Length: 631
Ligand SMILES: Nc1ncnc2c1ncn2[C@@H]1O[C@H](COP(=O)(O)OP(=O)(O)OP(=O)(O)O)[C@@H](O)[C@H]1O
Image (cartoon, rainbow, N blue to C red):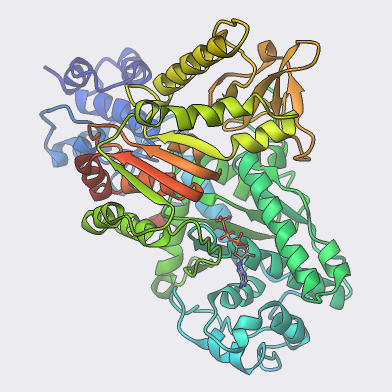
């Protein structure tokens, strides 16, 4: 039996993967089986979030016991095939007539190899761009540049979380900015403060990566950097930079803008010139809106030949951005503009192909030796959002490190405030029925749609999967039954219709026409005249937008949702419910992302073995981006 047949028989491939292999065979019946199988597996790999497929570790794609070919034979067959391009240079476009590319051990669908190449080119272009008018380092020569106060100077010159830059000392802030810098970063005067290091680096580098867990001050730091950039431009007689705030989802963009507004308020209170603060953007946008979608096209209005009209592009939740979108974003950033990526690298990688942030971070970290990738990375570790109600940090750290013994003992010990472990309980709908039902029923009692949406954000059940007994879909169906039952008991009978007063909805596809995006959450409410509408947040949180339910893009219920869909959102209380049996695609990143969605209270319903399984598994993806950037 051929390898392709074995894969099909094991039901390891999707119809699309199989169809790709079949079309190659139709075009050339002599195509070796190993090449056909590699094509199908490269296609499957993309669906599982990889940029390409590594024939040296094929078992990572499936549990099925397959007799894999000898790797050298497989590589030789790939290298000799007319369907497979083997580019000599990583930065050269691969032959358009070969649908596959074999490069540095990875088999790519050509399109994804090209995204990777274009992304690497684009990032290098941004990072290497010569400083623009009045850019830091140009505002004062290195010799004349002052440091931001004695303490800050010492702190900034200290060793960093990332290797020291090869091209200059991040410690130096132009003398003209030093007083403002000292006011913005008072901590820098007395301590080794990574936030001020990030800010000083931001002034020197066009490509900046600021990472850290929730509440480590990524947005706060960048807001202060934006104030510095505005001050710097004004001082040197230039117009203030045009700044865009963006994120992969609408909710994340909204949260980011909210954090920026808070940070600006705090600065005004600190006595920072209100006129400077007034130049900062107060709203965020999704990456799709920023780039400008075109109807029925994967292309955007903004690209290399029609770049974005912004001098600074700040993107939050960068871990969620997939390879194609990041490539298009980076190409649309104009020559000389800054790109700042904020994110938490311990969260789940993007659902679609990529693990882009991880690749960029790897290259940024290797740059002390490679010295070719001009990005600066600062990792923030101190949590500032101290909540007396929720003591999540020790648990998050154990999960991040895959330390199941510590995680379990913290969970079982019950000593973390706001953290409740329900060991072995994978069905809170049964054990906590009344409490959960009371919350969902209260949504229908809100005074208006804005209040209903605000209430909806107070609690969420998060699951690892969509399907199956502990999947979001099954839980939603049960919750809707329960709510229908409660309504029947409480008042006039109303069947559990598809849309009912108080139903929470989750949009599952992007619709630019509606300005509704994958991950947006809304609620169905009946108005005084009895008309039922679905309300979704608008630009102003006080003014949600109504839609007729029949006109909505694809959607599901949202009482329970997967951790993947919850990325970029936070809820006061989270119920993280993990399935009974472990599946190889679940990872510690899934647990970490799920539990860090909680603001005030976390309930974990799971058994020991699944926790151990997930924490031992690391969500790494096949990608050539790190290598490409370090070349
Ligand atoms: N240097 C600081 N001094 C005082 N408070 C700070 C400082 N840095 C951050 N904070 C506070 O910590 C909280 C979290 O900060 P911020 O929103 O910037 O973090 P974040 O890393 O962007 O979080 P998230 O990933 O959840 O978006 C805010 O309330 C902010 O005011």
